[in-house]
Length: 403
Image (cartoon, one colour):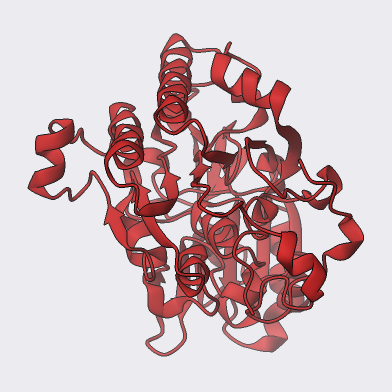
């Protein structure tokens, strides 16, 4: 592993990636010529899951490569973090603040899942400028529509082409652990049969983490099978580099607040409250997450609404838009007037009442209590030194730097 000094790297600015690096440094950054790279975004793979199960492939990667516990970004939801990993920049640069947002042009809550919302190039865009072909394989089709622009091959088992089911068998349903096995088998197929694809980005689903805690037998089985398939992928391309991290961890949650209803009952009505976790995969989390954007009816309501929210059990932090953009580097035009974050046991979402006690099996994320995740780099050349890697967005941002 090349000893590249952390001081040689600069903070990202605008849509560029390491754009201020010297020509000398630029020459040694990135994979060796013709080295294939597999980037694994293991959705929901918090440190608790890593430490719960014996995983021989990841243990070997840890012993022979670079391993480091790092932090995910706030809010700890998939779209904000997956985009940061894929683009190598913070949310205030790429523009994706969560899974849902208030569309200011229409005034309607909408999903953040289309590429027109992106404000920075993806890894696939950067690789293409270096003449490198790439693939995006995702268990969740929303990642294809959000991040797929620039990828040579785009594949999701939610909507597989018939040729891929002929190769790999019928794609499992989205609400299953088996869908991750299918996606990882697709990675192995590309490595074996499509050598022109030099970069593969694989995104799994966190459905198993929502369903089962780390100590559950079902969780052990899922993790061991993913680890086995990663080992097979490595054997299929022994010269390839493997990079792995996660978007967030996962916690059991015990209460949910409908903030709009709760505030209305306390004489502090608002325009709307949006759960940042809300997406189309309702069986995962029912749309409840540990962060919420609050839009005020008028600016003068800020103090009254803030006081009312702070009195709700489980609310850990109330931030103004200005503070959230500064501390968490979020895009100011795509978050609320107020940004609400729950404690380790609290989520926010739409209910038929102002609050609900959640069942013991309920698990979700979105708060600052789901930031602990692992980062692995195995068999890669010209890797920055360990201190370069602080957040999950650092995983691949040193690859194929923009001019």
